[in-house]
Image (cartoon, rainbow over all chains, first blue to last red; front, side, top):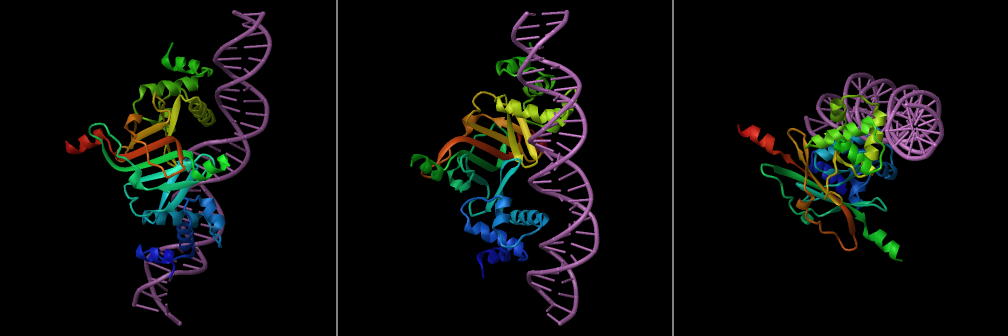
Length: 137
Length: 137
DNA sequence: TTTTAAATGCAACGAGGTTGCAAATATAAC
DNA sequence: GTTATATTTGCAACCTCGTTGCATTTAAAA
């Protein structure tokens, strides 16, 4: 049984072609993907509605997580262990790729008196290794 | 001369009612505001297009900055000193208010070999002081 | 194989945001 | 204060993202 299929079963979600395709694709990919990238890479095509509903379901089950770079720039990635309360992502300004960083790299943010944190999101913008190397050579 | 007017002049932007209104409102407000809040609180009403263009211009000049909570939840706030390379914001899950935190409170994020950071955005979700106190009483 | 709750596709819709263009306006020059 | 000019505004039209209701299809349990 495929890993994607197994993940869906563990979360008590019905296995459907669309869900399985999305999860499989994300498992293969190191980088976070946009809806368009996912659509283009899937063998079968699905209705937009189905995509949105699938993303929503998968996110609510904690299988994937959503990274909002800007209002119109959303990415999705598999939610690996340790991403529960803090997510850090690296966004490359040159190639636009988004990579998940370990939550271990996040230091707690100092808050004013009376404030209580439940979750912290960090987005670091910059130049990724690949793009740095291409400039050098 | 109003502070807003002065700020526009310093950035070599034409003073217009819409721009001046937006900047004035933001100077008065501790919290980041949504487009709707800004629209509702301004004396005169402006076309949506004008709003969007004003936000864009003000942001490009570094007068205000945009905080994207979610695809459909965008806020704007005055860009005060020290917010150039790192922004931290607190989002209250209860009252939805967004408060700018000093960038001093951000610790540099540890990056993998070869990655270079230029800017860091942090959003801390939780409960603000006001909402914490209301629960107690 | 049958049953049934859940997922899909479709059409229609609403919100956020952009573009082109003519009319209005802020500022600088007179 | 007038005039000239570049910028900004408002409008209409448009695009993308994302949602909702409903009839049809499908996964999976019996």
